[in-house]
Length: 202
Image (cartoon, rainbow, N blue to C red; front, side, top):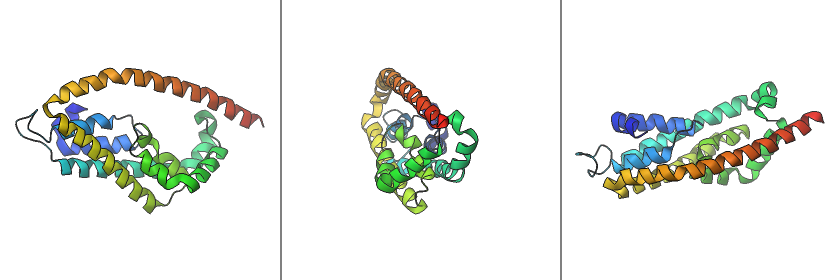
């Protein structure tokens, strides 16, 4: 992650931002934080980024990736369920529930979801399935993404020359978090399989 940002500059940051928001497992925390550290001369002879540049590029990339995920879910969501729903553990009742949920909480869920780790990468999918209005989705995604990028960039900038120590601490702390996520996903998958089987049986 750091190598891509360091060697390819804004273009590398843009690509990583798009992939992260398009449901690829890209740790944007590291990318934006490292870019923020590179805004100083503390770890390089010359600052390679500006804070405003990182915020703009990161926000634009996040918006592009989010729109891709949104449009795929919106245009092919029900088709995917028809063809591969039993393998993906999805039913049309799930899509209907998603639509009702977004009718009630849609705006807040997209805005808040964009500033939550992991959630921010996938919040576009239920928004697309629920056919949330494109203009509202783009606006809230832009606001939430800008806040997220600015926060991480600011933390990286504040870390400055201590960035490598901060990144090392983050690496050590991520494994317990990953373990909890895996256990949670395993439980959710087991519960989901039972639900889909009951639905198919009925």
